[in-house]
Image (cartoon, rainbow, N blue to C red; front, top):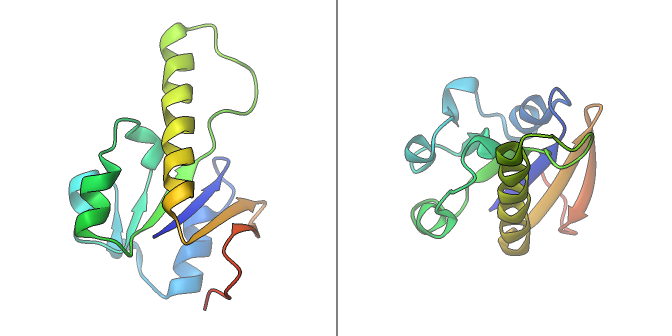
Amino acid sequence: MMLIIGGAGQGKLDYVLRKTGYTPDQVARTPEEAKHKPIFDGVEDWPDLDEEGLLAVNPELILICDEVGCGVVPVDPSQRAWREQVGRLCCRLAKRAERVERIFCGLPMTLKGDAPWN
């Protein structure tokens, strides 16, 4: 499993599609779709994701998640709680991942994983 993180609009999905040769129709947008597709984009929308169950079915999945913990802290308690949940989910995913990359301005930074990717 790989985890790709970065801010909104930083080119994460374009980067993954370019590196893998997959096409947009191979990108899941829900956990159910992610059981049968190679890429899951929008992980931040699923902070209660059952990553154990999903990765048991699709262990080679590439997960793409927006970084949501940077910037101004929201006044709304539910928004703060959501950010906290997404951050903790990313920590669990990063621990399990073979490779973690952060994309900033379309440029990759490898945070975990020494082997070249493609």
